[in-house]
Image (cartoon, rainbow, N blue to C red):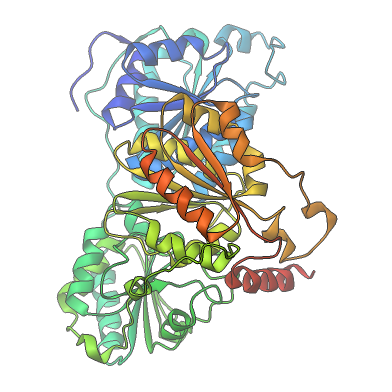
Length: 552
């Protein structure tokens, strides 16, 4: 990274953001951060003004998943604490997000003045964010600002998790002593002896296995080592399933890809093929309840080789530090190729082999809608699924090699998807976003439709209207799952220039799909009416599992 001369603290931060690939900063203005926002604009960073701070966080999260890093900028306390939930989600799901907050002047802090937007405790916001980030700094001395900024950004890039940078208003224009480069901490080097022993034990199990399977997760994407997974697949010949959170880490048209495994949420073949394997090579997966289908997964620990970013566990043996990339590379060299015909591989791409024939007068059903979507998703598109039925129903959408899938499949914060459309569309303007959003979740963050329209973005949003919180109904029914019915498709017109409609039959859906594809320069919003309890069977199974866990 080139040296920076004669800059202020604000300019230094702006230039460091640009240097790591940030082009857009999501946020809401406030008096403590206005001066810093001016500096960002002067340094060719675009401020994307959202409707509230929570939405800014969700948008920046999706942006980071595609761009490799994202940034959000808000004012103090009222802005930062409104943002908090989105940052927690990014922390849980390994999303590299740079959180920037303005703050009152340092003199106001020193005199303990009761300033607006504060509680009087000027350490409160820093203390809170320090618990949900991998680095949290407050700029209080301009001579130390460069080192603090660089250390925070370096931690974000190294650990793939949020960091927090607090900039008091009077620090923005203070002269800054620049550093030459950001010193990004290296990924820990694998212990050569631990790596050797882990590989030897793994190979000893895999070499005698007749029905091995790879179960892979999100760490391949976050640490940018998908190519290592591809080489392992080619070398081994093994079938592969991925977690929901890891969906699209490889092309789902790959002949060895069998589907997404999430316990009882999975198709029967995928569930049986993984659970009946005599050796499971589990790589880079977060073993959360959602990734394991509400813990309906049955993975025998005696058959499990489990490798994450910095450690390997095989049965009851633990090897650390062993980096995931090093472990995969070593396995690729050591494993013997197994013939495709001997491994009972039924590729997920076979789901596309049967064409979909719409029945024009037939009422749309959940299962038929998603079958149609499997043939609708085009190459080079980005699919976004909202938490709830949409997330579970999209498990079997087949992602092509240049498609991406985005969802909060671990933290599962309802309301994520609409602002995520904004972030994803700005991160990849040459690709079309296709989103599936339930009516209950949409009511939480629907305002961001206006921001999508404001910036001339063109996602296709399917609003799944099944009259309330269906994901909660299948867990436990009650009047609290009801919501006020809206005329959702009319909201897009209220917010600005867009195209929208509502559909109830398969014939109406076909007409809408044609119009959405032709309407390539603006938002297309399609409200799909389904019956209240018409949801995918995977959600029903998940609801029963969660209900039992919660004692309902």
